[in-house]
Length: 491
Image 1 (cartoon, one colour):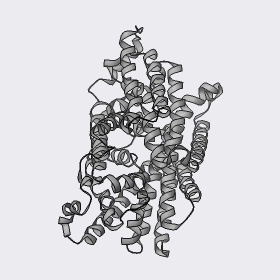
Image 2 (tube, one colour):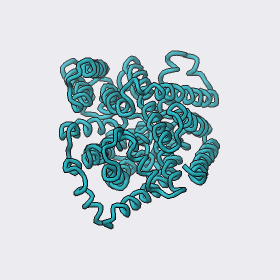
Image 3 (cartoon, helix red, strand yellow):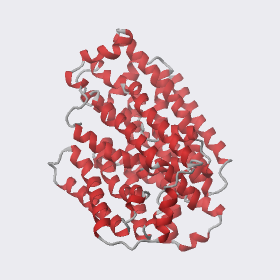
Image 4 (tube, one colour):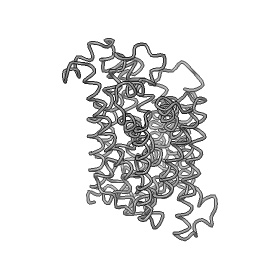
């Protein structure tokens, strides 16, 4: 990192502060803070949904996978997420927007009280908030690894820097600050990513044809669509998980749909995000695929992308690429903090402390900022201790992806009329059954990666459906009316 690189990175931080201060003026109450008042345009929501779907972990954990396993990463990750998001856009996204319009929800778990009962809502809210501490902690740890490569700073210092910046602007500006940062960082990422793509293509020396001849210079398995342990079974398992995740099981992604002005706007946002997932990773991942040509037999493949950037990018652009990586992580961690604080503020704290229900809008907004601050501090602590959970990849895939299912199944399927018979008993059985499956895969070490990741969610799905149809659930007129209204074709 040269002086000009530091200047570029500092300018990015100043842009973040400016975005936060500008958003601060738009935030008058908790609805503005958590859902942007339901006024997000579809193009901004779509870009934000896309950007919030991945973080600096792509440049660390996934860069290591691209180095060792090649093109299969694009198949099981980018294509899988793109297809999952498309399905989510068509079936689920409009329902989230309609929920806000019809019931006034500000958090993804708020509707669970009416759909199931208080016990189910609280279990999902508490479980999801705790799981998110690990997920966001993994992403902060990822950006710290990149900072270590670029600047030589310690991992702890990098985590504190990334977490501190995220904490500052999201606490000030809420969702408006988050989505505008997403848009700004996507512009930065486009410029930095295309620059990196062109530089690597030039270094390969074959012109545009290098996109195809590249694979002849790599191990044969790197060009395979599937590469052990990322088998077709693993890809199907991740597609299954990603559908529930990008439908809104990952709460910050649900917020992008909830904050849309109508069901049709939410659908368009999801389709835009899906298209970006199919196209943009082809450019973003290309330098990662090429890394083994320039750095053979790396002891730690997760360092490959950072080493490529240091070696090939000219002065100034290195700071831009680091800013892009920083932005990737901060957009996701900030959106997670905002959404989880909505769940804590709207669904958890009022149950624990009943007087909160009588708070004025001004006091509720103060509480929202306080919970956002507190949650972010917890994620920083988790990031500092990430090595105890299997590192960055372990936190994000082995822990978060595996634990997502037990809470996502009742949330997403609960929006669909065809599962109206699945009440609170089905939800609770599926949650605890999925958590038990997760525990078993951790205790018994002989499961494949595909089984470890998919078993908890598959268990939850089967138990949710079977329990709903085998155990008689007293149908509620209110629930039937709610689900029917979400199924209406009108906006």
